[in-house]
Image (cartoon, rainbow, N blue to C red):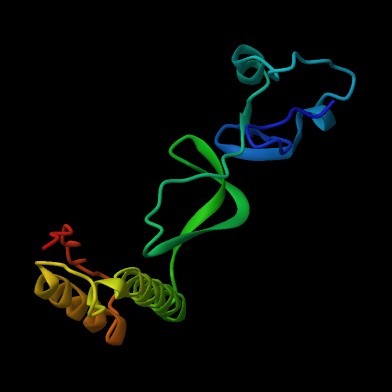
Length: 159
């Protein structure tokens, strides 16, 4: 019986003796004739068998780094199956371009949502505030950046 992990995947365990990984497998492969509770083996059992769950998560900064699966290794007493690598210049550029495109599209959507404010038969007392707001949105749409300070939508003030 495989022991499902938090995401439904089978957890892989490493047998660590004297700081060295000796074997790795799902618990059902390591102990094929043993039945474990639905939550998996107890911490006491794992400790007695020198087993550690291989961690596939690690703290990293997703704006500059990525996780890659690697041959399991021990760091700080924890067995990891992932390593943190810096994003390549091409990956960073792709992320920046994606953010810029998203900001451009958001600016265009906000512009479209306020088109009605510029119609001649709309009686807004603060039409100029809407014009200034829309000018700021146009600047963002024409020259999108990765970091944007969005203008504040004026409240409707009717004449």
